[in-house]
Image (cartoon, rainbow, N blue to C red; front, side, top):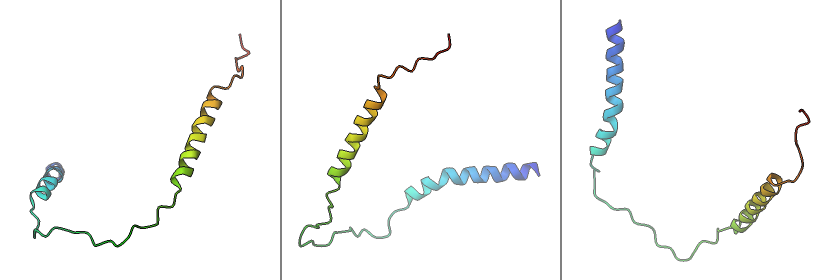
Amino acid sequence: MRFGKIGMAAVAAASLVSAPVLAQAVQPVSSVERTGAAVESESDLEGGSGIIIAILAAAAVIAGIIIAADGSDDTPTSP
């Protein structure tokens, strides 16, 4: 029983080690290169939400700095 478990563990370890090596060694079946389709005009799906996200991120950073630099005196009252 003990040798069976050790043997199964060895087989599992060997398959984990050899799988990437074997996958890398496999050559592609054909040498056809992929090409893109012809585009007539640019897409208008940009959205423009990048500026809004940048403004919200800047506001969050500024709010974090203000909260961290708050001048409240929170010293403990115990001696």
